[in-house]
Image (tube, rainbow, N blue to C red; front, side, top):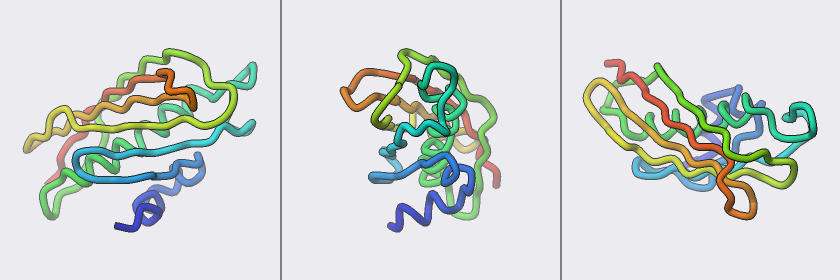
Length: 129
């Protein structure tokens, strides 16, 4: 599977710097490097960047769980920010919590380089036939 081709389907994910490590229906692993252009006041990664990161890797996991011919769209997303990230990279692990006929619920854990939890995101995606 061409991981970069999956990211390339979402131009905004490329703009944000999303990179994939691996991607299967059961787990999507991603990374995003700290960069000053992605920061908020105080030099930490902006919450919107972390949300976009989680939404992007979640979209890929949702896509990999779709039935043939279907598409998906995020209909709800909940983010808990747990710690600021002011250097290095963040890493994501996305897993499906529920794969149904009409919705897919995914959870993305974002950690820093030291393995400390930075954010936890739960999103629901609609399955569009």
